Amino acid sequence: MTIIERRLSSVSDLVAAALVSDSDRDALERVAERYAIALTPAIANAIDRGASSDPLALQFIPSERELHPHPRENDDPIGDRLKSPAPGIVHRCADRVLFKIASVCPVYCRFCFRREMVGPANGDALSAEEFAQAIAYIRQTPSIWEVILTGGDPLILSPRRIRETVEALSTISHVKVLRWHTRVPVVDPERISADLIDALNSSHQTVFVGLHTNHPRELTLAARSAISRLADAGLPLLSQTVLLKGVNDDADTLEALMRQLVELRVKPYYLHHGDLAPGTTHFRTTIEHGRQLMAELRRRVSGIALPTYVLDLPGAHGKVPVESGSLSDTTDGYRFRDRHGRSHEYEDACAAPDVP
Image (tube, rainbow, N blue to C red; front, side):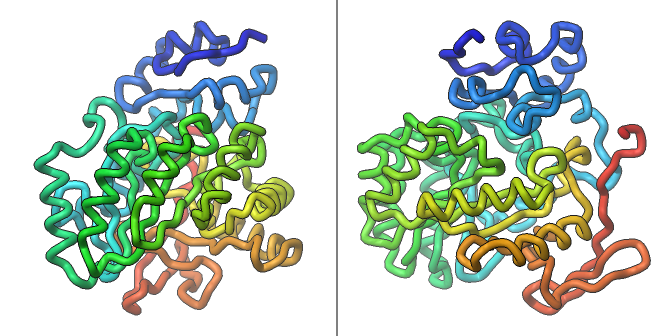
């Protein structure tokens, strides 16, 4: 098997690497016109090219199925734009904000809920003026206790840019916690350098790293080494996982992933139900299947290896735990209560009308 040594960012790249068939080129080019494509060498070389349903390939290689959105899907499935008072800022919860400092990622997940907002067509990062406006908003809003750095993937930025961000946030006295959400340690582990770790640790605030990983095979030797470098530097690590049909929607896979994360000093945090992002119906399970998986996980693993199963309600109403009393069955789906006690109807949308 040929070793891939450079980032793949086009359909032609994928064909040349024998990751897709040339006969699929036309359909995949239509996908690429709308959604960004990128695989790092770390991910491309970890894919089993002989498997028809490899869990890594499903996550990163585009599919013609992305061209068939479900009627309930939309380009802002959790309502980022509805709660954006300044460039790069999403302020849904009083004590914390999302700070989207980058618009690009080292890889592009095919199920991404921000797939309409990320990629080279959206620029690499906030401009200096936009960054200043975002910092000003955080400074002027004393209820903000935690800033969650996201994007895109914020760790695609250089250590210098990361340090500049940390320095700007360090001057805001009411901000006590910084949390960096990233896929970099598993998809581009060599980026986790001593300089990058020093930049993350340059704040007097408490710093967490939220690691996004969905399958045990993502935890390669290089990824494990990168995660260990972060943990050895004293950075607390949390994980986020998306429940994905055909990737990790079985108890054995989830059990293995959560156990291995804990062994790597990463606390499983959230298991996300798939959002209603356009062209992602083939990834979503039913709510009931997710509840059954969590019940089985609860029987199998220690509490420290158990994530919280959550749904991000459409319309910017925030996350709700799927297993708790916030949920009740209805004729057509479910009714959830948000953190304010307001009721919201949610109908499972798991299969587009024209996609089996």
